Amino acid sequence: MCKKVHHPGHAHGKPDAASRRAFLSSLISTVAFLPLASYGQEKTSIGMAEQFRQMSEDYEREGLAAPFRGITANSDVLPGLFEISPSGVSTEPVRNAAERFIASLNNVQLAKTMFPVDDVQWRRWMNQHFYVRQGISMQEMTEAQRDLAFGLMRVSLSTRGFEQTRNVMRLNETLAELTGDSVFLGEWLYYITIMGRPSATEPWGWQFSGHHAIINFFVLGDQVVMTPLFLGSEPVRATSGKYQGVAVLQQEQQDGLGMVHALTAAQQQKAILNFSKTGNNNLTEAFKDNVVLEYAGIQTKDLETPARKQLCDLVKLYISNMDDGHAQVKMSEVEKHIENTWFAWVGGTQEDSVFYYRIQSPVILIEFDHQRPANLAKFAKDRNLPTQQHIHCVVRTPNGNDYGKDLLRQHYLTNPHQS
Image (cartoon, rainbow, N blue to C red; front, side):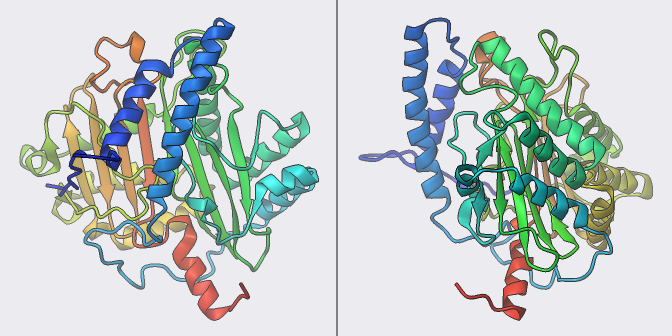
């Protein structure tokens, strides 16, 4: 079983982190969906939002208090997993697209959008819709700037990855329609920051951040690291409104079920940590850069070839959000550690079950989770139980290379930079 950190409640004085997070979750579930039908309601909603903002700032401050180390299995960062080495896949299209986007920004927009490549801004992301974000939002961009921003995303992501990201944005518009909240929800409330200056030789990158979509894209030469990656939605399928018919993360859901069904009964006994799922299980979301997460479930070395291939295909599904060339490079890295890759499951295994699964190796960590209702809690049969209409997915690079930080460290060792 995966060892979980115990967060005791507070006794006196300031509530502890777990208590604040629980209260924050409660507030989101109870008031975040309030319609803004009148000035009075809007004023109330904005007042609550200020409370949300303060709590998210507290969460951020606590989450960034410790220097970055990276996610590990036992507190020790494994050395020598990542190296600066030509990938053979050009990043020139990404660099050119970024330069065109930067050139479209005025001085005020540039000041908001540009950060040093080693800035802590990389770690300042959070899924919640009320989080105060940096950079320039697509809502404030001109149509031409928005096209250039999408151009950067198109050349950085695969066709599937770009379309899935766009559909997350569209479903955030559906959520705004369902809740009547166009202040904190909507298709264009997504922000872009540029880290460093686009370069063929120096490290740089970009970040896309908003409700249910966070992309961190680090570039060094022709190497790319695209984690942490967060994709989710509530709802995951639009049954009405402007984007009726749009759906996301359905293949991740179905292929996850296919993976657990590919296991024998004995293997399922190892892989399934708990047949009951009553809460949110994701462990590596915002400000969880240094989580210690023990391997759990069943190890790939104990699987027969068909099940092993199915697991590789499931990993590839997530990695394929990157452009095709760099996705192949990343899969080669994953395959080097395939014997030490683990698959774990929580929840039921039927088509209508809610569940969580995790794939973990020294070089990749993937989490899929059916979450409790949040913004749509008032429509839920039971707001305390997870639903297939609210999904969170996270992809991480353990052992210190989220945000490309291990590559950046190595670069600085061989290329000293003045502070």
